[in-house]
Image (cartoon, rainbow, N blue to C red; front, side):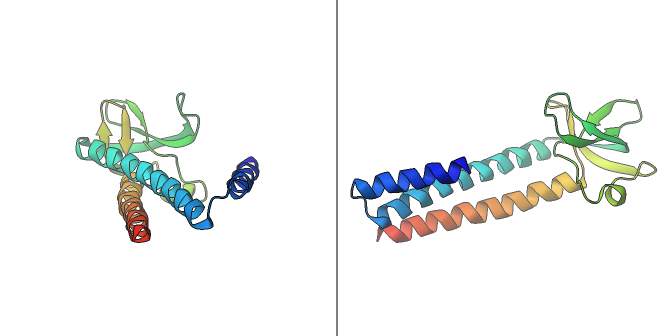
Length: 148
């Protein structure tokens, strides 16, 4: 709600100072393009981390909160009883279908972060790369087209 009120105040001030609607729209599109760029860069970093990680076989152990992040995530345990949190939050609605403690899973372990990427995290990274890149590219193309 505060964001909407702030945005309305900015638009009112811009109109009072005589800014055109086209200029305000372009400024908003630049802001959206910057957000899309940050999202794309986040998923690129995740993809590079994923490529540099090592495959290990683990069992699902539990879903709980991480000490550092504070969100619910899946935890996996390897053969040596080392427990690793997943890099992304766990699914909320389909927990009982997605996470099975009786099954062995192949995950990617990032030793630097001490986190794993399960198959759902890999799907998230790939989808984020595709959609984030497409969004950023679309915004850049729109902005370049509006310059002409």
